Image (cartoon, rainbow, N blue to C red):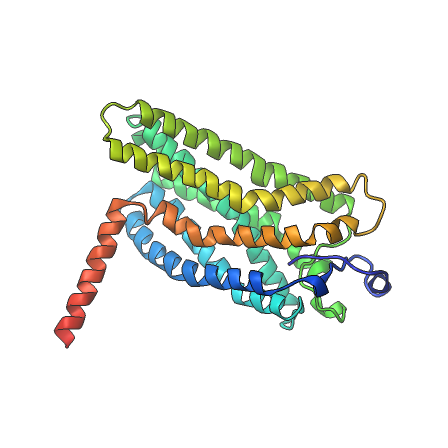
Length: 321
């Protein structure tokens, strides 16, 4: 998922770069992917079950939470392939179509997650700040339409993945899968758009929404102190997780776009930022594991449901014995 190419490689495939793979230790990233998969898979499975019941109960927030967990679960299913790919020295052995599909899932997951996180923050903002008016503003139909539009726009926006040369793993002996290609005006413009539309604007919305939630809750006289602390911690955790998981990756995207206008050496930027780039990919992956923790498992009702489910399971085991 990363890259940069010596002069010898350009003779065979001129639009790729070849990073210093020999200097890379694959273990940290492979270990991170393994941990994210181990934690995120059961957490999202539990979240999907619980939020499905919330959707059936006409809970507007449940639609966003269910969609987010489903999106994360689909992405997590591709992590074993990425881990094996990295561990094998960035060699893809499953063909070009599999590379394009897994790359497509990665890009879609990132931006669907970002926009759904914004929807969740805005929905909570409306529910808290406009508690009375929210009955008319927050409707299941609206949430379903917004979610559908987000998925459709992001999916269509990343459809060029299937015709990109970076996904053609069988055209070179290196078998690279979506490693950074040589900069071009098209890719540079796309990176600017991803930074502004896919990151900066959602970040501003998320920060404004959560800061307003904090301000409103702090000024509320009827809310218990423990509930205020809980809302405050959750809002800060949402902002922090978004910044930590997505900022490094998009800062590199922006830097790469800017460097296109000034760089004179081919693949210079791709070689120099290779290690930070791989670290940013790892950080973006963590989001798929922590989303259920912040948005579902912090709810008292969810705690009670999990407790009741475990009690029921324990009773069934005792009766069977």
